[in-house]
Amino acid sequence: MAYYIGKSLKVMMEKMANDPLVINVNPGKVDLYSTKPHSHFKKRCKKISWGKSLKNFLLDKEELIRQLYFISGDWDLKASSYRDYETYKYMKEIYESDDYTQTQRYKDLMEVIDKGEKFKHKGPKMKTKEDVRERYFKRYLKVFKSMEENGYLPGKAIDIGFAAIGRNGEVIKMQRGRHRLAIAKLVGVESIPLKVIYIHPKWVEKEAIGIRGEFSLEGLGRALNKVEGDYR
Image 1: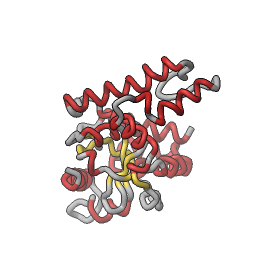
Image 2 (image 1 turned 60 degrees about the horizontal axis):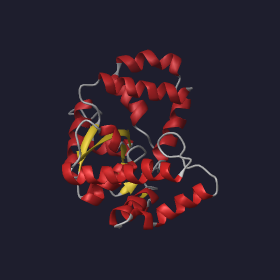
Image 3 (image 1 turned 120 degrees about the vertical axis):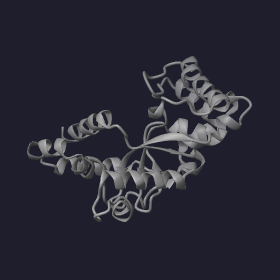
Image 4 (image 1 turned 30 degrees about the horizontal axis):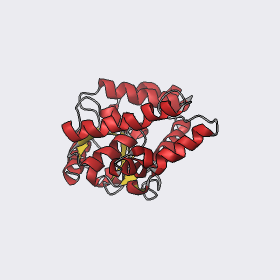
């Protein structure tokens, strides 16, 4: 329950904010991946006394960001190479193949169906080989073609998904949009939006401060602009 309260507050704040925490970066420069900030956030939510704090959070946007976005720990140090992540490898194999039915990914998924098992990916489980061909391979081939011809289409930030900012200002890709990020990297898209949902407080201490030496929304905005510049 605590996690869902925290998650709902973040969604509500993002809808109300005039300038949500979205950065535009060159996907070719996003080289790190991790899911660990999310587990740290769940633990944080359990420690918050929501009954006493909810009113204060709603009245103080800076405090809300501190509690729901600033996640301490070593999660950023444990991020791994995105190019070593299986999703990137799958998309790279499909992109470089003249015939997706000859890829190892295709053979592996066909074997799953042959065993009488189902393949779960973005929606209802796929039960047949035709399901897999249409809803997985042909689907992503269309995305490859679209991005090659049109680049990233505005208005689909959620497709690219979420990111975190590590202690040194590094952009770390998280869940949501992992396949589309891989495709954007492979076809050479120049810019994509990423929604920042977690930030390491050590980076905030170094970069996202106001003129009085304290954290401020203005300071955070300037710091995120700097990250954008570093990732272009």
